[in-house]
Length: 94
Image (cartoon, rainbow, N blue to C red):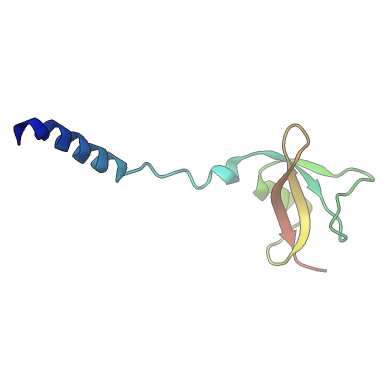
């Protein structure tokens, strides 16, 4: 039994350490800044003139007058290289 003690202790510690994790920062998404492009009623980006906002999702909602509630897109996030992300802000139909 003594020769298995170290193995049992190692397994017990591994299980014990894996049972507890550090919680992730749930507000990390809210702190991310992106380039937001305003979308028109047709669900496409405003191109003439191009309407953009650089900041957080909450800032984009405020800048473009978006509110929660439906499937009508108000704005879409783009990364620093100009690639569209799957982050949309939706607005209520007018």
